[in-house]
Image 1: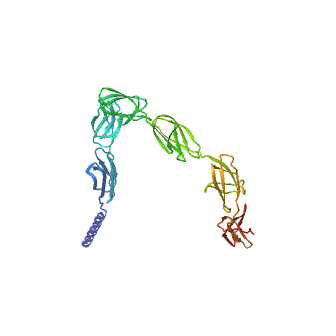
Image 2: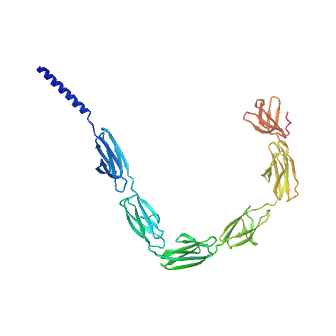
Image 3: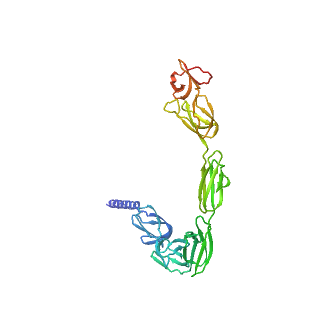
Length: 445
């Protein structure tokens, strides 16, 4: 019996030890929380202030809701709820937004408002400030004394800033002959004459007048407060410039009958008015033109001088022939009709006098003609070039000589065997092909 009791006690002790071991294994560990915030702020967890700064590292009981609060004066307070698990590592980032404070600016006159030297707007208007601090505000209007005031923003409560500026002004009247001149006051365009300035600050002011075709006028005037000053100004006209250009250059210039030089040329210091311009150039028609110049105008006249020419009609065989005048190409004849061997009439406009015309075409002998070109009554030129083969094709049955027209990638060759007669040789029928030139060549087989 005693032995049985001892065994029961031992069994109870073992069960109790097992229960304690299980509880130890199920022990709950705290969670780790890392918080970063910008800018530095106060952290509170479940309404308990932890610390102030930009970085926090705290432990939290697991499996429980935690309310995070980040606050800083002048910024919107942020809240966030988390529910960390056992041994969980949490990281929360915050970026606080500044509180915007509205301020209404008003003044007895339209005035510019400057904050710490930066213009915010013109009264009346509202402006939202995002940083709670002290600001230096300046109200400024032409003809009034600056008014500076300090604006302290410690909360987000709307504010009204109402200012009355004191007058410190003079009156200035500006007139000109002619009227309509642009007026700049201290470098800023303000309108056209006649013009009156009111509420100007006393002291020195620079008045500038600008008008097309007239010299600029500038004057500094000293103004006294509560006094009226009048400026009556007469503007002087600018001289004109006339630039004359011609094609070809080197034409002699006459203005109102007086010789001035040769093109290109710029004539300065001309008065406003109308001028008779005449240009003369050898072998070209004389040009006369009337030019109207306004005061201060810089005007350019360009003249296309017409060469004194005559017309010569040319017709060629073959139909496509290049025509050269004194070695320079001036025209190419074209077929009168499709596949025609004769060209249509080509009218050449040539300078007066004796010239050498050269006619050339592939496969034909080049020919030259001397012509005396007159204004009218020139004899037409009817020309047939001598055919000159330049290529030879040998087939199994014969040898063919003619003008090479084209060579295809597949080996085919097209020749003009005689004027206006063409033949294409397939690659398989060509035994040999070469460029060829000989005098007194025999006819094709």
